[in-house]
Length: 246
Image 1 (tube, helix red, strand yellow):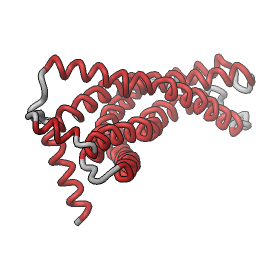
Image 2 (cartoon, rainbow, N blue to C red):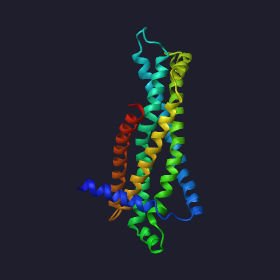
Image 3 (tube, rainbow, N blue to C red):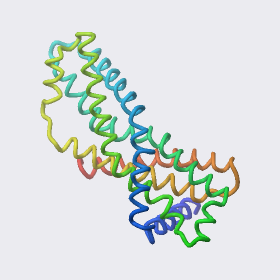
Image 4 (cartoon, rainbow, N blue to C red):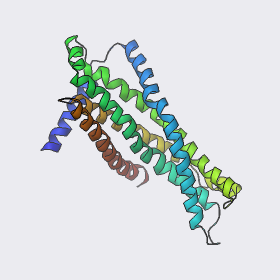
């Protein structure tokens, strides 16, 4: 029953979010601000983590490739598949649910407990649309850019470790990156990023919007937003993988 009520409440908040938006000019200004606030500011940590994950993945693959029967370029091929198919779109989205999701929930939740949302409603402004919709649109738009940077940094990390250690020739690594490559791999990763961007912002916005109480409840709902976003990212990862690759 609690699960059903939670889903119903979420859908009602989303219905309110996608109706009666503010003026177009104001909306555009908010979207641009949120793209920088949620997306651009996330790029440094995304690139840093992706770079070192690429290094770790490449080290582990090279360590396992002691058999002379396995072509050296396989290391580059496996690194590409791991980074593009799962790490960058899925694992990075789960990490962003902690940074971006909790931030959104805390921001909106604080406005709720300090009655700023009530003030917006008194002025005749659709508070859900005003606060949540720009964040959803902005993050969905910027998410493919973030994931693209993540992919590049992850693959670059693999290149750095091949150059430093010499375990795998860099020429073989680049050959593996190109081997059996299709543009659908990138398309698939970016499609997943769109879904995950919506999941993170909509769930976080919902948990911030329904806060009742004080600062303690804001913290609890921020944690719930991060956990629930991660769970639904995993669920939709399975669904999208089955649809596109099954």
